[in-house]
Image 1 (spheres, one colour):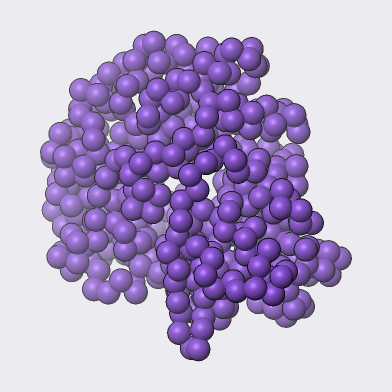
Image 2: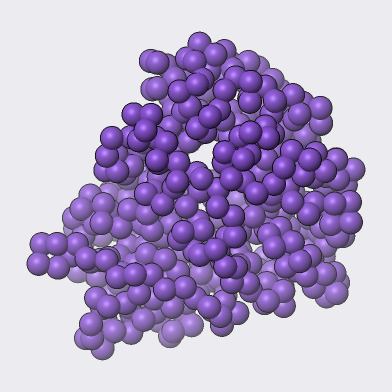
Length: 444
């Protein structure tokens, strides 16, 4: 069957999800093309042209995010909110208008709001969870005229109601298909400073109160073998040498032995590669580990500190200590690895004092790639424990608000303090600030 996979994302990010799904469809024997909305100058006309020329039987729309925030110096607090649903609706309406193809939704943004997306787009079918197995199964059953409403993770409309089938985890990640980056315009991504990305595992053993991954992917790690991970690296490099290849895991260095084994496999194969990752946590980051990272080609790391207040780390259930943070920062500072730090202010219990604790520690180190500060906690799925506090503090009345872009800020952070904090951080050369709770901060 012919399948068109639309990467509906319009914010700078590697198309890793669509690439893995495209690879799975190719491995199952289907004819696959991709449409990259991020580069469309005239989205409707370009999409119409590709659909007309290719004439797909299935159009799969990969949704990365529901809402987004971008740095915009002309906006209040330097941050602009984007409702990303509008572009997805434009894509879905375009497909329906010119094609009789079956439309199936998927992607991380669909994971959290399956029924809401079906209602919003007036569509009938989508697949949540890990689609490397579910999507080829959908294609197989659709082609054979068999039941598609029992496929793991599917969400569908039936007799006026929306039904959901539980997700299933892929146990043997080594058996999944390679990401089909050969179908993507990698040169365009490089021009926009975006590197291709791969995943090395699924699952998360941490239980951070603001994060849903553990409930969605499970608390047990499912690991790709180091050999398979490095096979994927070699495959991406065989297409065209990227400036950097990213690991887009949720915490690349957890478990630390797995990350070390991947680095050792790169070294054993004598590969000349450059890799980075947007998320490591301050656990197990020693001088020896940093040396191993560097020797295997690490060219960038982002350390997810979020808070350096002992009280806030406990409140957030982050699973590490202030001493762990200091150790990680000391080792990274000695390593010559370009690294940045991410902070998150506004969780329940956050006060001006806890924020000062964090900034006082961070400012004792030179952060070569700068510090990214997120102010306000995105409430983006019912799987976040922080929703309990949001309801108790009157910042979330109904879960239906989540799809419309709800956020939370600790009520112990006065408005005047927050405004002064934001403006102060924005004047610091080494800080970038993203403000998620614009309205609440400006009106409280």
